[in-house]
Image (cartoon, rainbow, N blue to C red):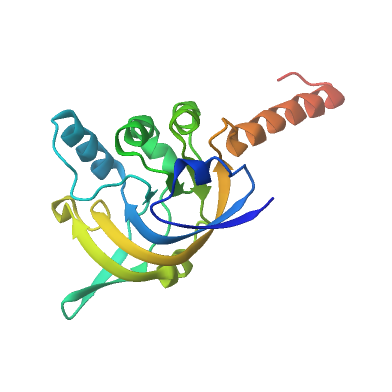
Length: 201
């Protein structure tokens, strides 16, 4: 296990250094995107339209932040991670189309996303659920908000962050997925326990 501190835009070369269980901190630009933003971004890409921000080398954060207006500026109050499995149907195409290097969320992602991360050079950074205030503390500036018509939680919030983390690398760019490994081990252990107790599955 190693600790890395990367600045955006992050290169594929740097991403390939990371392995599962490494710890990552990000400084620079991260962009929030949930279901609706993923859907719209992919529709725009299909229509040949440019996104409001170039995501290449950046981190996308599965998050519906609470943001308040202070004067003419937005300030992040809380920014806890959303369960990432909801974005699994979009994420492989999202990585392919936009060159995102880090996906941040909680709960993990599946095979399609894992394969896309391996092919295009990206990782999944797990952020602790329930630590929304910690995440907000690392957000030094709300640079902009795009697609606010989707609503505060679903909009693209563009944050400037300083040492955002700790993120635990749960899916690396080499095809390793901690969530799959844990599920496999749990299944193996369950079979052993059932056998020991003399009961069937």
